[in-house]
Image (tube, rainbow, N blue to C red; front, side, top):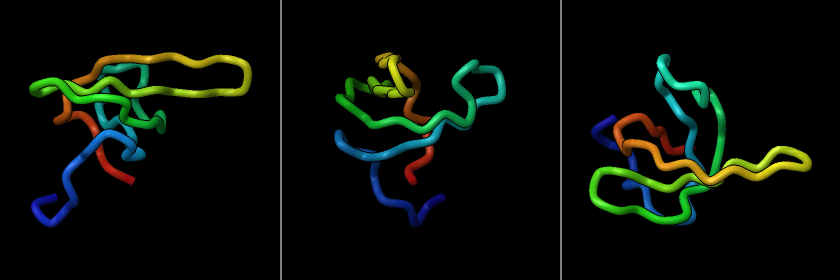
Length: 60
């Protein structure tokens, strides 16, 4: 993962955290603050904005 691009607002990411209910979900980074990112998940008729640690996110 050392050669990956930095995660920036607007990036598409996948959650890689086996302890999270969002593991495997794909979303869009809305903003970054420190070591956490606000990720927007959209699914049909629902939207959810969740703050997650950057280390649990993988850029798509």
